[in-house]
Image 1 (cartoon, helix red, strand yellow):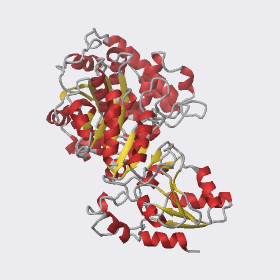
Image 2: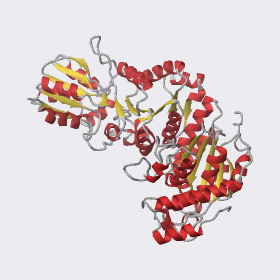
Image 3: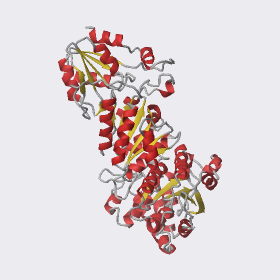
Image 4: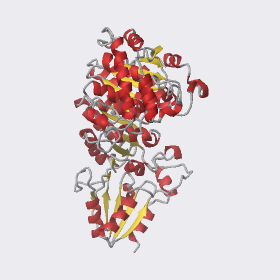
Length: 274
Length: 301
């Protein structure tokens, strides 16, 4: 199989612009949090730089994107809003009967290509998409963002095997390795999830590991991939990155900040490069 | 029936490059082997991995292909249940899940291979259509329907190989969502689906008993069933499925809603696992299903 072209990754990446965008996105997400309690702030903050790089520097319009960690979708919503795909009015109506957006992405809503929320589904769907695109031969690529908790799902490894069996090098997987499930620290309570890159190597993937909040490093790792195999970028991240009291604190998987917490978060947010 | 499916699929696949089949480590029957040789990329074997079989079908459908998932019924539906539910039904994708060997067809393999509650489960899933043809002719028409539609997921329940043709030259053609009379009669009508209707035809032989194939379990032909409930003094429902959540329950509910005056008997698999091995008929007998029982049910006042 010939290597799939990587036109976007070859472009120069503007890291400063990415930092500015992600600061804006974090503020926007915090604003949304003041209207509804149903929000996964911390897991959205951990995958924000990764998702920003995919949308702004890698993915072409015809390529596919699957947010397998559906609870990270508010990061996707605010990026799609910024790109003009998601109407701002829908962000304002988030999680209300008047709107179409929920706390997990749903196929058919603006810019959303797959319904996720139940974990361990997105990579399999991505493999099917990548397989179809390989058959069609139009050179399109598939981007999937996975949570580290999904590495505990058997279905993820069924999908990983099939991707490698068929050498789907048009499949690019991004693991948001924030080291937390909904309940506890993974490395402490489920140490066998690690090492991650070695597992993907053993499954026949090309793998790279970088700081997942360093957008330039994420982009560079993708640009440097050799091809010929499915590619996984393991992004080491911090759950709740950007707000000190949320970082590494599991409750912020679910909670929305109250008024005082919101003010504190807005006050301390700044551009992040690692 | 299995071979009919494979032959029809192969012929259509030659014409439509979007058609693909995704199997989970099951040997390709009939023309499926030809499909595999001639179009190797369109025959995908995920190995012993059913969740990815369904997940891949979802992704392939989302990118414009027409995939069919195909394996033994228990592994097509039960093992990857939540993938069928979320990936196919929730997203409304036109993927056909083919379950081979519905009911206790795999009569020597034990309960792990008996799809005893598959129709109930498939019917319970929002957005899922369910078809269970009774013979190779219905299997052919049902396969063509699945290939031709883009409305949403379908569970296609097949038997295995060697089923006789049950309809006659005068039987109406298969129409999705409409029951089909296999033979006429006036004393009673047997309603059922799948290869077990062979038993119904045997029971009706020499008697004035009508037999109807309710091949489409969802959407159910409510009007057609109501007409039968109004026409016959006795209606017998025969299904190779557990007694809950199948055609029997639906017919009784419809009878109540339509104020039917007929008597209704429901024959089904027992709601238990039987640890019995033998021929298909012997497994059915272990579940209390036989031609004699059916004749008795159709005849009793």
